[in-house]
Every structure is written in C-alpha cells, then in structure tokens.
Image 1 (cartoon, rainbow, N blue to C red):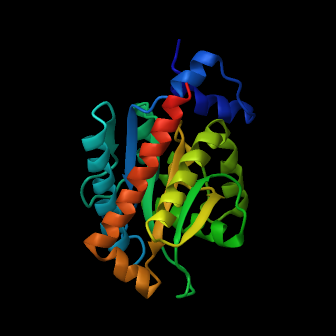
Image 2 (image 1 turned 90 degrees about the vertical axis):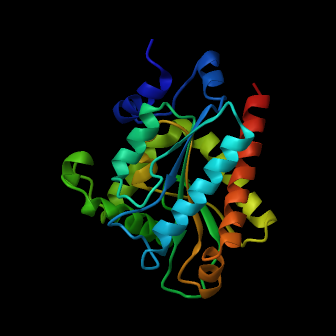
Length: 260
C-alpha cells in the first residue's frame, strides 16, 4: 500500500474535498520523525532588506535545526539549503515530500510599506483573510519568475492573480489542524520571549502549497521596521527567534505523540 504521505496531494487535486482517515493513518500522522527546515530565498533571490532576509533566514534555520538535532536524537532534520544558493519553490516542497517528512517549517523575514509595522506572523495554507495577507503571498510567490520554465513547473500558475492564490487553499485541508496547532505554538513562544506576535494567519504561499505534511511559513519580523531590523541583525536577536521556534516544536511534538 502506498503511504498516505505520497497519495494525499494527488487525492486533493482530484477531489478537492476533506479527507477521512483510518485510525492507523491518523497514528502515522501523529509521529514526528523527520522535519524539513526551509530557509527562505537565497542565491540570486535576496528577499527583502537588500539581501538581509536570505542571510537571517538561513542563520535562524540552522540554529533551529541544531537545537532539534541536539535534543531529539530520533528526529532527522533536513534542510532545503544550508548555504547561500537559489532553490526553486517547487523543489523545496519536493525535498520534503520525497523525504516523507512529518513537518515543514519555512523561515522568512517580512517587510511593509509602513515603517511602523512590526511583529511576527506564522502562516498556514488557506484563504486570504486580508488584502495585506494576499499582497504578502504575491510578493513571496513572485520568486517563481526567477525560475526556468516556471509556467511548466507550476502548471500555468500566475503569481499576480488573486483567484489563483485562493485556489491554492484547497490543497492543504488534510493537514490544516496540525498546521494550525504548530503555528499557534510558534506565536505563543514568540510572545513569551518578548516579541510582538501578530498571530496566526492564512495565505496561499507556493512554498507550502504542494507539501504533503503539516506546514507553516514563519515571518520572523519586519526588516522595514528599524527596531526589528536592528534586532534581527544581531546574533542575540536571531537566537531569540530560533529558541522560540524550537520551543514550539518541542511542545508540538510532545503533545502530538503523547495523545496517541
């Protein structure tokens, strides 16, 4: 029998409906043995802040991974990138799917027209609740324009189309509950460690569109805000963010496996 993690995305694309799992399949989803940590952007894609985002995201991703590796010998940590290289968005999902990972964490930094905007946000796949969420998803998804043959890779997806982004929301319904659970732990830990939490939100990010596991995209702060840019520019600030994400993972894994 094919693993549920190999068949979920195909089933979602065909039916577009909610799933009904057997008890054994539910137990398979309640074990965290592999986690993929994705440092956003990289290489020719600098992200926001004139290249600061790709550097800070990588540093935080590596810090989170090392903490998990040190504390959980039974968990395999897989990185989409460990250096300053460009990885197409669909390949990031493929890395997670081929590894049959149990959790996907994509790490980014934010930006806004208003210099006063600040705080952390954790996104799960879903409908765009506000125009700001939609604009953020469009900005992150526009990275595909840097890829060769992006129209073929994403089946004609238009990163500037609001309708296209809304359609993406249908593809992760199977993992919505666990994605939301982990996201809430992340934002709770951010707040506990002195960060301004803007809460859990939903948007259509391509990087988590095709992942067949619980997935989140974390915006660790606004580089367009001078105070947060200064904080993320320090090792202490990035360690604070990494510790918060790790603590969220620690709680999420413990709660999930303890409830079997």
